[in-house]
Image 1 (spheres, rainbow, N blue to C red):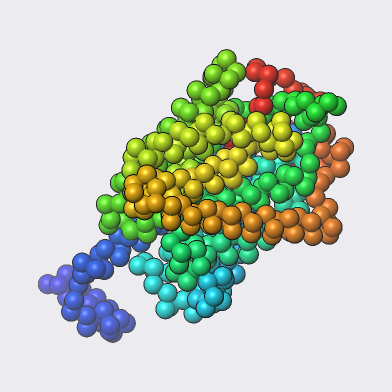
Image 2 (tube, helix red, strand yellow; image 1 turned 90 degrees about the vertical axis):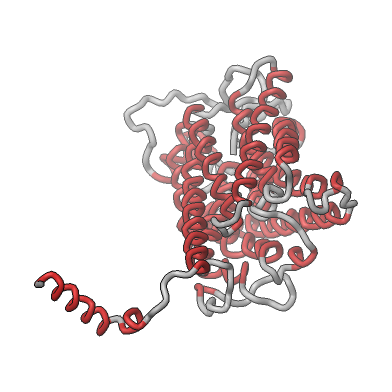
Length: 456
């Protein structure tokens, strides 16, 4: 009797405090359940994309020198919160706010006045997913400019790319008002929107900074500068691979669609083919299978299929991944030996070049409209237009930003600080304080006598 009385009193109190709940006579509906599942799915995928920042940190640290580890970790750490805060302040509005010209959003800043937006899930959940995407685009730049950029200069550039450069491209492609969206441009999860923006910005930064001390000899010959921990690089690559299953399938914004199984499959197949393709090229070219470039190959396959993961067949995904894996070491060699652009972790080749190829490949391999499936050249032309526009935008804004930052605070650390390591000069601490670090001088010699440029 006392127990029943307690229950009745509890219900009475709840009825007084929450009258709306007490009067409700309808329970969960099929639609509300679907929305709940979709929301949980998108948030889980966002958490996986968040985890990718651990992967970027480990890869970049592992494939650069020990004396710069703190600096690498600090850059990757700060990129995430800066990207999130700036995407909240300006980025989301520029990306998804309504407009009349298809170029840039004009509302939704600070997540204000967002009640009218309909993404199929709560707007806050959609914002969270997009915010971690934004930070991913920014952190790509970190590896390409590693071991010689000033920490302040990197932070200032991160502000620009996350607050302005990236959100504008998002609006073009992923907003229903965007001009590329209206043309039918397909970049499902961001081969160009995310990876292209990051990769081409990285190209401009690495070019303007110049090569690391000792990267090239007096006659222009390439000198290998090995990273200090290939194990960290491998672990980081596998974490990135795992995170990609949030990146691509999560872009459905729905956990109640069967498409997520197909997208996960195409993602896995492309990554696998890219890994094998890069390994075979390095084995044939250098006489031994190179782990560093093979790790690149896995990431190149992932980047390559990201645009078309929802539009191509499993066989198409394998072909895209395989070509990306083959293209990767050739691109690395080009930038190292021909262009003389020093990219310590291969970000330009993985994200810029393979992102460009993957976006164009949609025009060939898309089941609906692809050239190889009877679609003619219409989609191919749209894809090429988007690639050129995104490359030009990221490069122009990147050039202007780096130039202004260079004039204001300088881009590059002093030669003395570069030789000593950025950990001491920029942060006043070492990552391996209990170890005696052996200086490699200007450069090191490692295993194969070829470009030892590595993943991410």
